[in-house]
Amino acid sequence: MDSSTPVSHTINIPGISQESSREESLLSSIEGKLEANCSSVTIFKAPSEINIEGRNVFVPAKVSIGPFHHGAAHLQSVENLKWRYLSTFLKHNSSLTLQDLIKIVVKSESRLKKCYEKKFCSLDRDEFSLIMLLDCCFILELLLRYSKRRFKRRNDPVFTTPGLLFDIKCDLMLLENQIPYFLLDEIYEKVLDPREENMFLSDLTFRFFRTMVPGDRKFMGDNFVVEADHLLEMVHSCFLSTYPPVKTNDKLKSKELPSASKLKTAGIKFKNARSSKSLLDIKFQNGVLEIPPLRVYQQTEAILRNLAAYEIRQSGTDQQVKSYLKFMSHLLQSDGDVKILCRKKILYALEDDEEQIIENLKWIREQKESLSGTYFAGIVQKLNEKPDRSVVRWRRLRRKPTAIGVAADLMVVVIFGAAFFAAFSILQRRYK
Image (cartoon, rainbow, N blue to C red; front, side, top):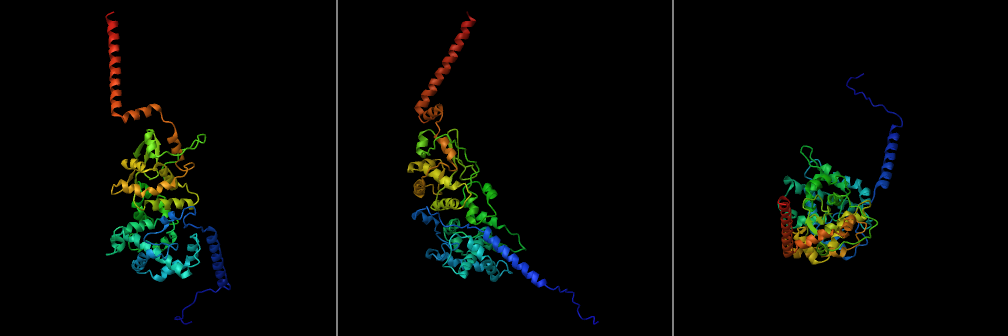
């Protein structure tokens, strides 16, 4: 035998290729059925009960993400910017190609479509896949540029145009402006450079949104979910109260929450709970209603109403943000009510302008609904209980300096009189 002739060690077993083909076919079939049965809609349209005017808060101001608002004329400037972001994104990893990204999106197309509530009859397969690819890479590139200096580019309009970054942050928190998180995660894994220290995608996302959520930063970091359906769900997790709901007494008649002015007249005090962990950590004890501070700006309505709408459409939630909006709608029934909370710094703005805060919160008065059965129903019951009469009298006296002076004088006279008669009694017994 010629030693130069290579010897083949391959063993051919009849039927091996057919068995392998059958396994792949069965695997594909099972995966398809699992996907069909386990997949559920996670990205919704606004609830149907919201009126037409109220739907404006679900429309993005600067950037469209996903198919719901794709193609809107007022969003074209950032739509063009997405192509520049995609070009830069592809350069972060020399082994990553555009074809690699396209394969990921096309492979997940069926799963991606099932995440959205609405059927996209007007979108063909290529157009839908292009939207997913472009929007996904835009978000990832934005998160990288925001958190890491080496990824930033000169003359990037997102970071140099006043207010644009803030508007985009708000747009990425809208109910109808979401993209499935699993796609973000999968593509992010592909762009990572193994030679460098990389941050988790959830950490990048937290850094990007942390200034948009009121409350304690450590609490937010600990509660920021790392496995979510989309970005809005991750942000929503940071708004949840750290307090359990106050138990309600079913024997008591359900009463509604009086306005801030009426509560103040009744002797209830308001306190800025600045040390609270969450915006929803509302507490009432010893006649004091503690409410965490809320920064009020033009987009406050959009953010809070999108969070509440998410709760409505997502089954299994406590609807805490929706309960908060109802609670505040009862408190803030007039300009005077808003001013009471402004003066306690429970409501504030960077410009410290009361009139602007009043203007930006007029919408909340329209949300007045029953608080029965809500997350804060127990607190409402406690606020409606009759306070101790002596406490009420003392608070009324504290508001009237003259009355306090008279009360103090009377107390001195009583104490002096008691001391005098005690001394007189001792002297009588001694010299008797």
